[in-house]
Length: 181
Image (cartoon, rainbow, N blue to C red; front, side, top):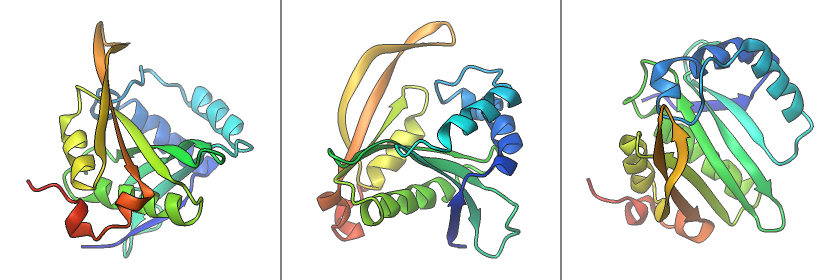
């Protein structure tokens, strides 16, 4: 299994990000309402360039072409005083189920704890993505609560689930933090 490599998101990645966010396999799982325009994506990126409260990355596989992006993700709402951040990740359409999301999530957590000195990393999932909730649980994220009827998405109100992992929990040996199954 190839290891994952990360680099900061660049302007040249925006057409691919735009394409992915408009793919039903991604926007159907997230609270992104397509169509997301390329100009809108470029405006978003321009605003993030000087925003110290987020780090956005693209992921490739070691040994693959450096331009073959397999996932995008990052840490947002980085709060230095409270030492917390929200994690997000999405995998290239058609490449889910290959361990890419879990490797990118591990990389982001390692980055957050070692480079940003975070105490807590959390994320939100929806009822639409139980596979992601199970993945995060296997990686050590704990269920912290459900925001019932929290978002109106695709014609109905859906729940959002909060999961988080503390630095002290993350540093435990992998076998201790994995949930069986």
